[in-house]
View 1: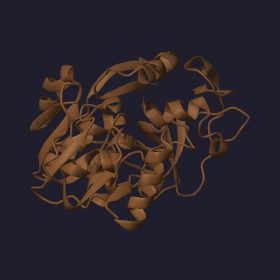
View 2 (view 1 turned 180 degrees about the vertical axis):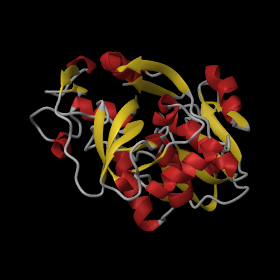
View 3 (view 1 turned 180 degrees about the horizontal axis):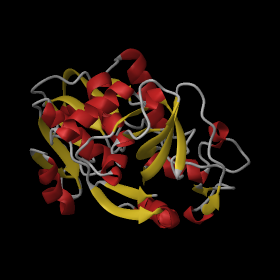
View 4 (view 1 turned 90 degrees about the vertical axis):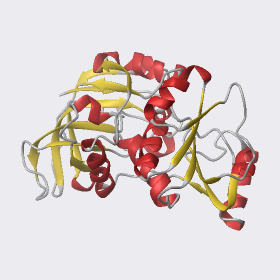
Length: 312
């Protein structure tokens, strides 16, 4: 099988396309002919070596999180050969940038029937992050007033649509050039962050920091009493922000950090929303496996809306 591998950590150009052995199948697993994947920020961090203590220091690695394809061999009672599926592999474990992948039955679900493989492949990691951040960690309620930062990004577009499914009023932050796109996704009130700040009016029942660019003190004035601030990242590049997050989670318990993980029930919930038309994947650009370096470069440069897809 063909796979994009890295033999060392570094810039996007470290990717090489090589013939690799097909992974062996064990009980409770399925072998999938992978049709598509995507690029997530965490995939670039793995490639750069920022998770090397978990991914290892040496050897060949196939990275990548999202996948969508067809089951061609199964040792799982839940999935038969020929089933079209999608899902997410652990970003640390990786393996999705390959033509054939072996996946645990708990990490895969039937693909939304109305989506192509490419469309389905951009949903899992960002969709699970949004669902687990809003519904599980944020205990999202019907009709709430929700703020989503970075509402036009991969996680933000998913979070906005999930919140609208729950009948929430969504305020979103994005750059001024993306305001029309934000409204297309479903944002009710758009705040261009390059023109004005989020008003401190204690108006939000839940703030979901999809962009991962804020600390709770940045937006505390906009939260209602006892409301939650849920973030995808907590001061990862800022020691002060990290300490602040730790103190808040221990004492005030108003802040939570999303720790996304594969979950079959959540994947099926996302699939149902996609099939009902309530959850739409937004693809900025599609690359081939041989263009993976360019895809990762685009992710690192930013400036796009939605997700970057990779066809395999």
